[in-house]
Image 1 (cartoon, protein in one colour):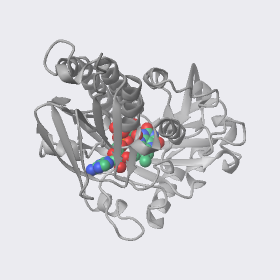
Image 2: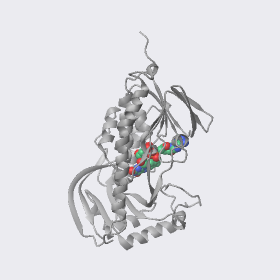
Image 3: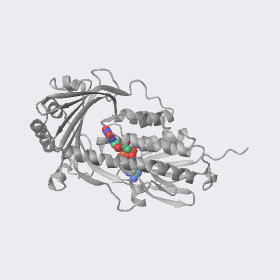
Image 4: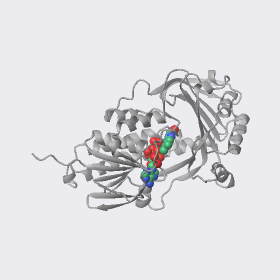
Length: 388
Ligand SMILES: Cc1cc2nc3c(=O)[nH]c(=O)nc-3n(C[C@H](O)[C@H](O)[C@H](O)COP(=O)(O)OP(=O)(O)OC[C@H]3O[C@@H](n4cnc5c(N)ncnc54)[C@H](O)[C@@H]3O)c2cc1C
């Protein structure tokens, strides 16, 4: 009997959305090749994430055991005010490091199928086949093209010209520092806790994550913090987005890029409005980084044999804690929908196209709800009329 050909997916983007797609589709019997613009591994830039069930589900589907050292548990949520007064609520959860998740996924992908330093430029669809083209001149053909290339997706730009995330009017300043570098004033408050300070138009939060090498041993972990503050479009934001060598960034600043004057402004602001234990975290962080907060909702996820997923399709504010979980949920659902679908039955029952249509119908409502929830949370937090 003839063995049916394995369907082949081309994935654009080698971050979490692209790697979840690769490992899940492999598990569903597809051939997958991933193209990532960055020539280096992406593991040096991430901070922390709250572990979501969808991440575990996708790892499980792909046959990846994350191990006992995947995350750091916290017991309580602690809400502090400017003077350090505390309110505690028992709410156990687990925090993971972005780089720990990224490395587990990357190690599960066959290196021969991960092409780093390849920038996608355009695609062409011809019947049930898609060809992707790259700045290097390379062209790749497959049965499905997956745009997992993030909030400024080049795949989406071809499908929906002019569609871009909209700036929400505030940014997240972030920092990660080794447990050993924590100021003594900060450590007792942060131990086993997920700490918040809500204030007038700002929110600070902090939690512990595994060390850069993945260790979850006390003394070898890291403390992750995020501080949401308003910053209007205009000269102040333009200045903030200029890096140390005068280059203007549009969406984020990686660690090491923020200018000293901006770091000093951040530290002064922290000393002014944050509880001393939290301000101590900010002033002890040598290389804070920055992410502007955006919203985006794609009208569709399937365009023939091209699909969008993860942040290319929906950008939900980080208050939802769902960026990685959403990418994982999209990818594992796509793999489940496509498992056992035959390339040569494209349009009939059991073919790829009806499976893609069903996947889209399933994913759109949940992702739309997530974006709306993120906007509602953001409005509540950033408009909060509480004392600093
Ligand atoms: C380096 C990095 C660190 C992050 N750290 C955190 C964190 O600490 N906490 C957190 O909550 N979220 C973090 N995020 C965001 C998080 O990964 C996403 O919100 C979520 O996981 C969905 O990811 P995504 O793969 O859809 O998009 P993204 O993570 O944005 O990835 C898109 C990928 O596509 C690549 N790409 C873009 N254009 C092209 C092109 N034309 N050709 C080829 N490749 C292209 C990019 O280089 C990038 O690797 C980080 C993202 C990155 C890239």
